[in-house]
Length: 129
Image 1: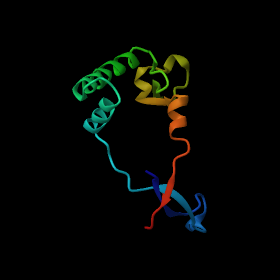
Image 2 (image 1 turned 45 degrees about the vertical axis):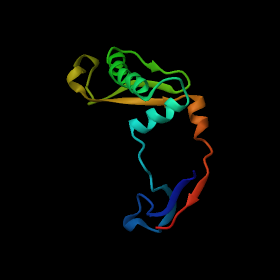
Image 3 (image 1 turned 90 degrees about the vertical axis):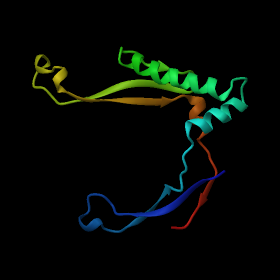
Image 4 (image 1 turned 45 degrees about the horizontal axis):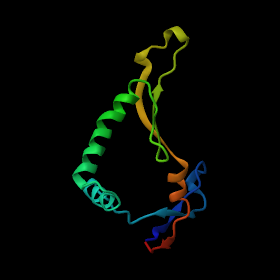
């Protein structure tokens, strides 16, 4: 199935009044696939039942954050790597930088080569609107 996109007008940043608008492709008409759908499809490609797959995914949801918050990166083979990053407020000296300066943490995902290759050259279809 092709990836659907549409033309979206966008002004040039940094120009008062926006200047001349140009059109850029934006993915549209996205639909969601839920966990039940994923489990059903994966079960068709394996010897596991949908509840077995669901159980593995739930276990990953419990396990991955535990590893991340204990200082590990989680590498899932050719799927990719999960890691933790943080954002902090600056401090004048290294001594003044404390955990209080840390504003938030984020989960980063770097897809593996095989995963990136699988979505590198999809078919596209332009839609109006």
